[in-house]
Amino acid sequence: MRALSELTEREVLALAIANEEEDSRIYASFSETCRAEYPASAKIFDEMAEEERGHRSSLFNLYRERFGEQLPPIRREDVRGFPKRRNLWWEKEVPAEKLRAEAALMEQTAANFYDSAATQVLDTRVRELFLHLAEVERGHEKKAEDLVGEHLTDNAKGVEAAANHRRFVLTYVQPGLAGLIDGSVSTLAPLFAAAFATKNNFETFLIGFAASVGAGISMGITEAMSDDGKISGRGSPWIRGTVCGVMTTVGGLGHTLPFLIPNSWPNAFWLATSIAAIIVAVELVAIAWVRTKYMETPFIRSIIQVVVGGALVLAVGILIGSS
Image 1 (cartoon, rainbow, N blue to C red):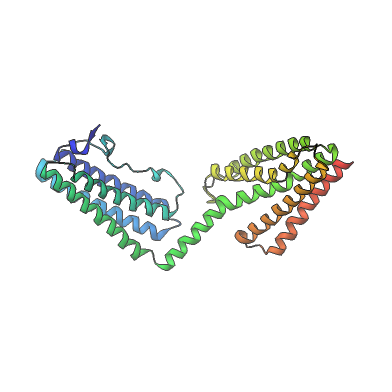
Image 2 (image 1 turned 120 degrees about the horizontal axis):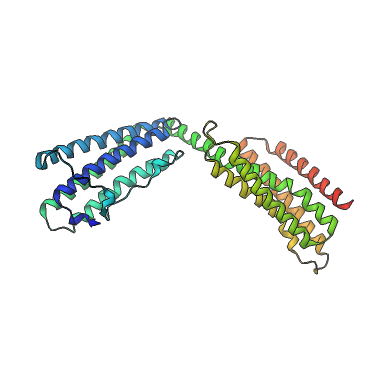
């Protein structure tokens, strides 16, 4: 690979043309990605893409006057040190705010790069060309800021914030809450059944650990396979499955870890069981709080629901283990 300073003026101008063309396609893909949920941001990216196409046309007219029609097939990937673009356009679900930040970074890094390159070359014509391109990129950045002010009104920001909140709840909160409920509640029966049947902390821990990890794997796979997110808009199945699986395991391990207390300790079994019961209460309150904050379920109603459910499962485990 050659550095930018090693390219001829013709190659640099061709590279700038290719850069503008690629960036216009990137902005167009950003617009397509967020058009359904973030229409205001889609308009911003549409106009930025149009700006890039206009600059590409101006650069090509200059190139045609000096070098003719034939463009050398040079790309930014062929030039050492040229700023690369992250492939966010491959991601199907990216918040509009992240796309706007990426667009600003694209423009700023390109301008900084041309500024830096202009100080490293001796050829006056190449230096002037670099400085010109830097100003062009700064113009893009200023235009992007103007477009944000024009299209992203307070109402549009509210719509986008609501869409972001909905996506966060569907992709992270719901799967995580389902996992936390399953891990905290479903593992109570086998854990406390083993505890009262064996009166052995370590054996109880092994059973609780196996139940927690097994439930985490099962819930993660179930969540990932239940919905690909395309129709429901619930997001990537891999993300949801991972969140659900991890939270299921965490929910089960919370009240399992106290049974690592050595059996040699005085009243080790009752100490571990008491701590586990306290942790279960904390888990149930946390579940109720999450339901209230994100699902708009009244806190008292949520507490009653989760406590009654958890108490029933706990009672079943104790009765079975004591029989």
